[in-house]
Image (tube, rainbow, N blue to C red; front, side, top):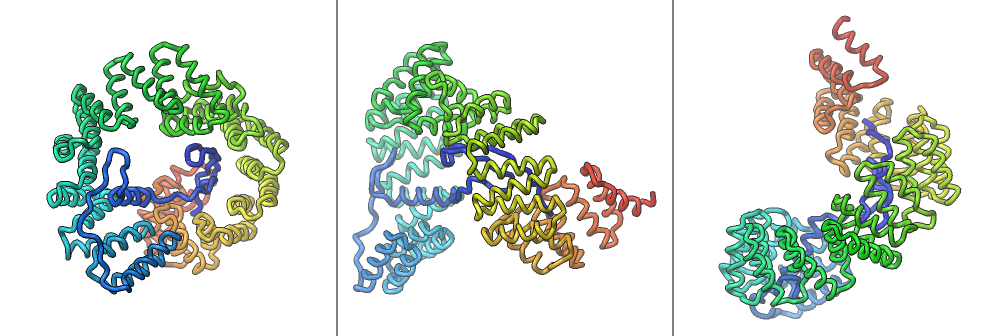
Length: 598
């Protein structure tokens, strides 16, 4: 079936530092999100194969002799693969490495190289299969075990990662980084006894390991052993005076213990070393505020506000640390303090509006959104949020007027015309909705979002052919647009037309949204229209497991049961549907009367 299609603005500013509204159907920012697993995997593999010093770790000890190639063929293919890799042509690098391995099938070095390129190319399944094959033949190869453990850890198979790391340490106690990887698995799982044992061994083998002392301090802190924790963090700083994390850990300890002077001293130490450390400045300002020293707090916030005019990173940090972290009250303390320094800052007013909006304080939110000027990077988002708040408060005309004023300020802003169209759509004024969305399309003729909304408006206005044509346009512009694929497929099914094409479209939509209840219902409805009632029931029941309270979907299940002559279940689902349905109940009531005889 067709999902709810109301456009709702939301905010997550830190993604691209500029807020734009989101809908229930599509992220309007159109940011391509990389899999977190793959990002983490790349980081782990980089860390465990790097020969450079990074935060709280030291390089892995090389395992095995320098690589010797048997013939020029291996060397040629390997060299060419590295050239392709540097150029970003990972597919070709994989092909060349496979050829090198064919020439020298016993080379673990070449196979490990192939594993790392697989990971870079997001072929983690191939990487894991190759590693498992390597470890079957060479179960004690430390480098392969390191890669294997890293991949398993990223894939959240911590038992396998622990087994690999424990074996590595048993085989080679000089693998310093592995202690940190293993200990952190235990630390994150709150297995503090095991974590303590691992980090203690790390320090025994590497007395100068600042990583070992730092993480042992974190173990002690979790165990409530504040004195021991402080000693370890202090020892970390003796070994690596430039590190910030041990200082922030000490701050947590001192704040919990109420050590006011020690807390201020650490913050000042951080800021003396780096006056531009925004996190430390904000935290110190909050600490002064909470301690009742409003003058010192305001001095810091005023300075941050003035600096924010040229240092956008300050605003980003507010967003990342406090708004996205849902620490709205702390964010508002900082932001209001910053506004004392720059009361006309559109950027700060916008983020303040977002913080209030996130707290459901819409009056305060709109008071700040409306202070965002047309020349601000945030003007569009502020306008849409303000209009949405007016609409939710029942001030529909005020919302429309506000958007129309925004269009006067920025006549070529397609988003304003699009949103004005959606507001008219919500008011069931489909003529004006169509008018403004078409104007948005004139400004951005290749924007699939606009055509999709136009198709929805046409559908609501009972212009089925025009709606289907708009959805075809969406699919032409974006073949992976699951909602358009579903919309067109379901419309075909509902009309009893092009049922094979409807099935194809909806199955394509499910590739991109495999657990979407509305799309699953659409597939079931196609089978219902095809007369395949048992198959239809299977998918329709799957759909209501995903979306249990949708009246149309419940009615579809009842229809399928009725076709299978199971009148008891048909009546049951019709009655459930009626409980959820708020309007247009006549047809459903008729079905119930026919089954009950009333």
